[in-house]
Length: 439
Image (cartoon, rainbow, N blue to C red):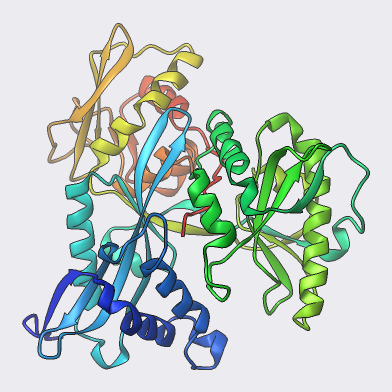
């Protein structure tokens, strides 16, 4: 295919782009849901990102502009976030609304937009880019499935509580007045061992009252409270069941992990009530809850047996695996201390068949992660302790796959010896995926 690279230029978004990009996005996304008509919810989401969003500005869009007309014909938006896992803080960009006007397809504009996105991310110190999307498509841009997105079951409506249990905890719709307490719940998640994306009070107020009513990604939030109305948890869910009658649940949290046995029946009963009432109002039956978090999440475990559903995953990319692993260093050091392991050498070298990193130790304790010397044949190089393809390393670091699972699925993963295997197995356990993306 021959493309004209002079016909278009890539630039940052500008306030004047709002209506044209809203129209393009509405016309190219989720057309199966609208019978080919513009999707009003996608248009509203685009406008919300341009106008009034607490963390996104027009400049966070990347736009392919036709030079002759000066009009945008393709775009994407980069949503900056900070994900946390204990002491680990990860600068993350979630990529959304990747679309091209049908008249301008075939010009590799998506390729150029992603090249500009990754260049900007590398410059800004972004260690991860994540995106949902078309199966396999984003592998073209060095993305790998490495983050759970959807529990492997749907809880049928008949398996949910028919009424709210008599309990010390209660559930009600959250309001903007709850924003500070909801932010406190998010802060409490930092010590619970999962990977999550906390919101501050301003972000919570936006979630609860800042979006246009028809914004496609608008969520409803149920507050979990004590008898005296102190917020101790929440669940975020779709406004109504989808066409299949399933109410999507995007997140659920308790400030104290030990509250889950009491909290789960209360939240499940409230969500069932929401599903029945909003489904009836929308003239569609409520068939069940569809949690969009992994099977290890407490609400998934307490929900009981459900209908098996093949789980999906997020695409993830890193442009700098050394920086990613260095960000992860507090977790690695803590895991090795907890396991009573001390590395017997001055360094541990990991080669990703293109990039290499060196973990430096002092008295058996991890002190730094730095670029390492590349090897032309890492599996045969006695100085390399582990040869791990970058996609497999992403799965390990984010806790999406354990080391035995990666070794089973990736024949080109190679470890030098049993000591290396023990250290890496302790370094990379499965991590509960608690990310509720900040759209």
